[in-house]
Image 1 (tube, rainbow, N blue to C red):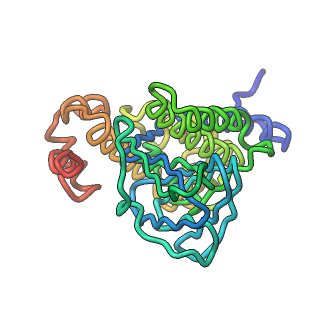
Image 2: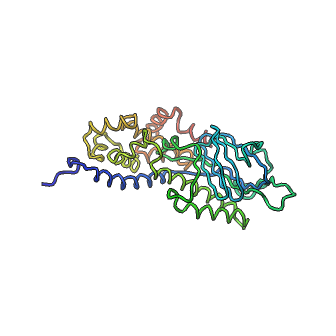
Image 3: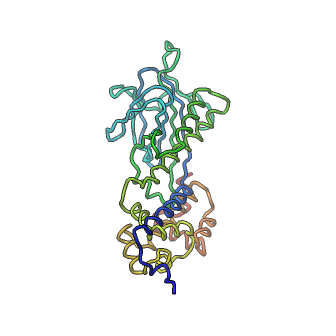
Length: 332
């Protein structure tokens, strides 16, 4: 008689093999829910001395690409990152920072410089002195709405500044995207501003994917759960079917462990019971669908398995502190 999987003895090799498959599925699920939408882009060219200050913008992210020249990025915590031509840096927390020609350079807010419209949400800033025939530095930056959907908790674990090493193995294909950005920045061809904006969003998404694929550089909370093959099965099921009315027993069956073992492991790893996590996941997705995808309240309620708009609204307000309608109006 063949035993059912939940009663088989696991070996390290079995766990390792399953973890790899599940990790790939989960990464795909994470990226499916990711939203990056640019709200402001600037193509900047400047002389040998420059300093730009960027305000903190919680809920947003910054992306910088240096096409020509050298620069220093100073984060809000004082950390300094040296940038050379071809460097890209992603700031997922939207923290305040400066881009400088050198650590001692004076700076002023980026929004105080004169701009020339180049396209939708894209403008140009030129501070290069007229005495210079060519700019000393050329860069492109974007401020974007950044949302990981149901996995938004991961965004809070991301580093303040992520400098992409295009020579390493973490970001395959990123160099080609950045090379394309340089061609668009330097050529100024028709439609280059819109193409640059899309390429910047792709580059930021690739940097995020590389961080996730490498284990998120953290072993706490949700990340630890994603690394646990049994918990990962249940989390993947929840994210694939958020509208299902899950029970603890059904989630335990997905994980191939008993109900009691699953509930204890889930609570110990994530700090919340399984069904509380399921409800909070629904509300995170609801927030994204209401504010970014602009779905109607009734459509969101139906997608998440609620029998009525009123039942969904009560659950949403209990978790988020305000009604779905108020959330939409705030984001408008």
